[in-house]
Length: 327
Ligand code: MEV
Image 1 (spheres, rainbow, N blue to C red):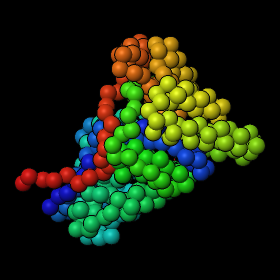
Image 2 (image 1 turned 180 degrees about the vertical axis):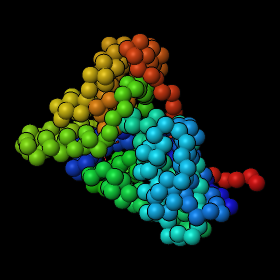
Image 3 (image 1 turned 30 degrees about the vertical axis):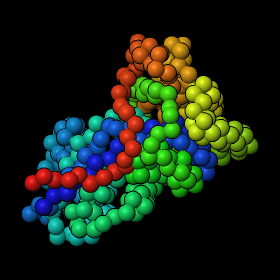
């Protein structure tokens, strides 16, 4: 017997990092799928296979390696083993989890959240449980808390529920399954992998060392997010772009941008983007630029010319969902 789930990826339009300490943030899902297939096996062990990374490791139930294929496979798949182990209640049943993801890893597009929610959802189906989205989100959020100290939960919420969400204080305040009319969003990847946890840690340090300065920036960021929600509803594209630029300045002030990101952001703005900023944890990873139909191609080309990879994807209205089998 086997069960599968598919999860989208995510981008954050406004409010990353500040959301960790209770600000509002706006995020949406994009159609880069992560597909997980869970199946029972006869031997009592856990095999995890990543198709796109060409890795496969079989762990005993205690986490010892039985078989391994691919460069550094044990190290890379062990966090996923730990996650699966903490979700399993029946030790006697062997399991194979196959992951096929189109989301670049460690680039701020929610790859680990997408894997976690797709695993949680497929294991639920495999074990005959119906899990509501709220339960999937809570399970993924608590797993993420074990991995990186202080996540806000926005990545897990976005890929679980799908669409565009306004998120604050561990909750989805508003969800749009149809997009308010948006200009074009171009995603540029710096190709520089980094850890979100590390950058969340840096911001926590800044907040501890300079509480007043942080509070001031955070207030500003909250105003920007509030105005962005309004600009989105009203379809005010120019204003939305200007707000993205303001948001980027605040992210620079808290030290989470990086030369690789600044380079693509400047290129996009110079080519006429309405606005541009980093998306996700920063330090590398991806940026987004807002453009209109007439200059979207020019902005994309400028990002590429500056050394970025343009990730082509569309808004996805659905969050994680089970895959139906035709067999
Ligand atoms: C990461 O996609 C978003 C951050 O705000 C971290 C978090 O909210 O957990 C940087």
